[in-house]
Amino acid sequence: MAGPVSFRVLFGSEDDARKLTIKSGIPSSVDELAFEIKTFFGVTEQFRLQYKDVDFGNEFMNLLSISDIQDRSTLKVVYLPCEATTSAISSAPSTKDNCSTIPVTPSNVSCSSSSQEPSDSASVDSCSSNDTVILSSPDSRSCTWPKDFVVPRFSYCAEMQLQKGNDEFNASGTLLSLTPKLRSDILEGIAEEIIKYTAYPKDNQFEKVAEALIQTHPCLREKGTRTGCCGWKHYIKIKMMNFRTKLGRAGHPEVTVNSLKNKQKGQGKPAANIKKPRRAEVNFCPNHPRGETNDSLEVERVALLTEVKKKNNETVIKEKMQRTFSYRRQEILQEPMITEVRNRWPALFEIGEVNLEFMRITTVPLISKFIGQLDKYTDGLMKVFRHKGGCAGQKIRTIMALTA
Image (cartoon, rainbow, N blue to C red; front, side, top):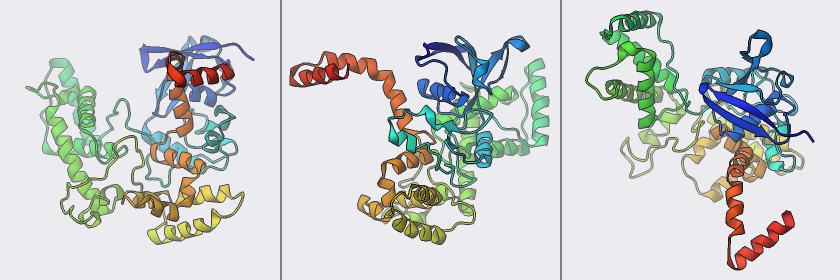
């Protein structure tokens, strides 16, 4: 067994350097190394890895082969924009022993199933060779709200005016005088970027977007406000309200689920019981796959009831559960009784499908994430167990002695 190795991991810049120790030695692949970083540091965004290449004066290069690094190497985590991971996932083939749900390296968009614990069957199942792509349609989301919001590029005319305004601001501190057309272009671009992550941003997310806007384009700062972007925050809120109205008319499911005709009796107000992501849901109410309708997906659901009764039929079940994900989410959001869900979707109550459904909704692997977080608290829990008194403490110490 190889000895422990340590890596210096940079998150963005030299100001945020962290130490990663792997007791089992250097992982066998770049994907396994990325998985170690993802679980150890609790990274939720998609990323690629870079290393310092001595052949090029210790400049950072994309890490494509695990042989390029050694003990005490310096690695850099480079976060990927949401649209990059979406396009990568949609174009990547689902190959044997690969899971096409966690794109972390530039060489492919899969996590090796060997990075899971062999004894954890549920974890292996959630990243098996039979898994189809997690995203149920090209419009589904592939990542959570980013740590640092990236301001998109606006129209050519808007970018030209902003560049000129930034130059004048840097030279003389003069703020840009906005025209209604320029403000409209900026807000439209911001709204289209926000919808990639959520249709219902929270107040602190609006603030982060406004701050990112004036940091990227300092000529847009506002005089007389505490943060320099209070007005922009208000404008973006209003824009997202109007943008949701447009999306609702276009039939966007995450918005139409809150329309008056879909509300229960006694909730005849638009603001009553808004259904929106409240925790870590990335694909809260996704669109149907292209070419699919409620009727066609209902046919798939009925066929699934027959498939679950067959033995050794996991491949077909996973494929049909993936295809009907958007249809199932629309049902779940109507808050049916658990018995009704069990009758209509019996496969959803299997361990493997619980893991896959969690991945579809949050883009996070359930078992590996849980084990990774549990490892952080293991030492503290062991101390609590050792000092536990009474009969419970005696039983715990007996069990700990057997497993020591």
